[in-house]
Amino acid sequence: MVSPRVCLSAIALAPMCAVAQLGPLPDDGRLTARVTLSHPVATIETLLDDLSNRTGVRLTADASVKEDLIVLRVKNVAAREVMERVASHFDWSWRAEDGGYVLFQSKEQKEREQKAYAEQLLLPLQRSQEAMRKWLPSIERDFEQNRARLREARERFRQVSPPNPEWGELYDEVERLEGIATPVALYTARLFLSINDEQYEQMIERGCLVFALTPTAAQWRVPQGLRDQAREVAADLGLDTTGVTSFEVIVAFSHNEDSIYSAESLPVDHADIAVLDSSGRVVATQTVFLPDVFLNNVGQRVIPHSDDRLRGRIIRSEAFDELVATGWPGTRRRLASESLAYLARGSNVPPMRGYGRLAVLVADALDLNLLADAHALWGPPSEALRMREADILVGGLFRDTWQLEDGWINARSSTWAVYRRHAVRVGRLRAVRDNYLASGGLSVGALAQYGREFSFFNLLDPFFSLTLDGTTEAPWAAAATKFFGTLTPAQLAHLAAGDALPA
Image (tube, rainbow, N blue to C red; front, side):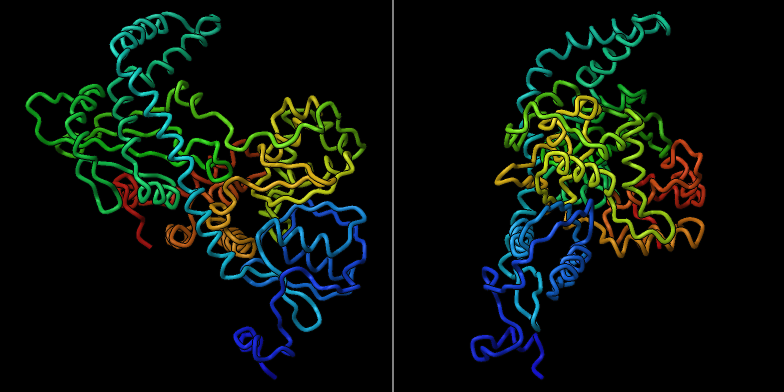
């Protein structure tokens, strides 16, 4: 029997081969069967198994796509329409094989995804740097005036304390001015403008990007035009630079994980600064947050609200009421807990199930079909759940990426290609989970292995957020403490220097 691989390469010469490339699905009467499906979040493989059982048609997925996550709710819809919409949503194709159909990604579709990846990866950086260039001149112009305001605000802040109502206002004012009226803040902003495409991609991969005057192999050299300004930064943070020729200023930008979900998000929201004297002793450290002025400048929607035909409609259903009855923040904790349920030993629940279930309940209440990739799901704001207004709630769930057409809610993440490239596949994530639970923790060697295999930020939320103790209020702190407690002083020094941990 000829193998499918041979068939694909010889399709023009062998029309009777068991495998055939397809455009639209053929006129197959079996696919006219109408189905009702509800999958809060499922792998493509799970969805196709379900659809196969309901239609009697063998439906499978290629290995490269079978673990992608999908959110689907359909009521009395032809199986053919479901199949075609799934393929169209992900930009995949169907092919006939052995009396059934296989969902796969063609060579051309892979190339389109690669192009989309490059564009989506850089979009948050490009937008943020554009906003920074517009913002920076006015801050430089008013720098001395704002610095005087900062000195005054700091002095007033030292004179008050809670419960004085002025304390909170002064705290916010000091924090705002520290982001625009100190040498270290300006240095950080200018350094941010120097980040190039290669460096940003490395930040995505490693979770942070480190600049230094004398960099290690894992760091980047401060651009020449900014090296002279480092002395002013060091002095501002407490190093006596009089006559000093050797010192170090290290700036570590931390990647904002939200930017992988939405191009609206800032790629960076803060930087950590460290000043070292000539002997290598740390003199001072400081965290610099990008200022509110900058945040407001880039807080515009990339994808506008697609539809407002749901406006004025209130979500009402018994199941929905039951889910949100705990009130906020109880509802949020409930949804988050369900979304992380796959971390429990032996669990086959896929990630994001809590918010997927909320999305399905919303579609049920509105009697609409729903198709979304799990990347588009986002926890709605508390106000949306309290109001239960359909347009606001759907917009909150899908971060303004949803569209309403012909009775369907369609939602696709604005950075779907980036997320898909960096996501940890469900099966592999379960293997990491099982190894973690079996070993009672994570060794330095295991962390190094996972760090080489996955982007760190794709493990931090789903993996390190594991609640080690059912009563623990801060599972991240518990997990981090457990990990860092295993490090030797030498290993900690590697991390401090920005170097990768040895396996």
